[in-house]
Image (cartoon, rainbow, N blue to C red; front, side, top):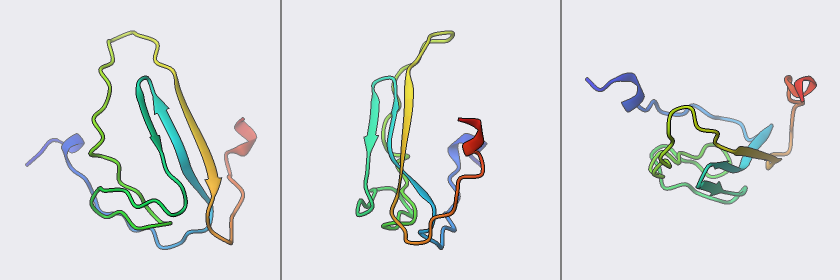
Amino acid sequence: MSPSYGCYCSSSAQSNADEDIFKFTFGSLKNCSNCNSLASGQYSVVNLYSNYQSIPPPTVLKSSVVPFSIEIGICGTGAYPNRCSHLH
């Protein structure tokens, strides 16, 4: 059996309502998608779930400062408010 970080569970996304991640950066890693993108990873479904596990991660040194960012957008028609928005 693989360690927990080597396992990947199937997605159970069933609704396109709410936010989607359009761009994620972490150091030299940059991943962009949109409402019509189909990721190459297992269990990916357009406008529901994207598996980008196959993208190789950048090398990160212990105790180093690594810039990161996340941009979100909405693809579905019935978006709900983000319950954590008060933390921004």
